[in-house]
Image (cartoon, rainbow, N blue to C red):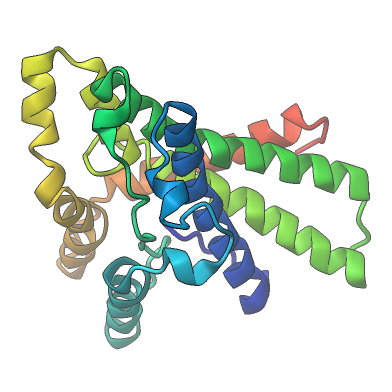
Length: 235
């Protein structure tokens, strides 16, 4: 999930987004390693090299199509959707596979929220000037907060294969968990329909229905303010 922040340069946005996604995926791998599964480590996925995390569909094709549709239809989407190659996890190596997968899933958003707070502390320590080199650093830190909050909160939507869906699977009774996990195969398509395609189609008929986008925008704004306060900054 990629945030939009129009006042930052394209380069700053790309660097912030790529770093956010990579650290999110690495967090999954670190959590799995701590629980006894070294699959991600053996396959070289605990790396900051972006090429190791590129997914041809999620990183290139889907964002490209969304950008093309946005350009062709002259509409603006508030958030550009995409994903990195999932970190390989061997859940059978966990003492409790279902609980282990829940912890691994939660590690991604937890990393994002922690990184957002660290970036806010960076803004406080920098005491940045509005122009000059410090201004570029401020832009990056602000964008880094935004991208981490968007990615972390979006992934908490309780639909598999998003992290929130896998957390729900770990919390539900076994029979319900099995049924909910069955959404995994078509979950991404469902998310694309509900969050991006259906609201855009309805807008063509002047029907304004975008509960996920509007809700996410409200929560991200609230979370941004909260992160600044937790770092000792004013709004």
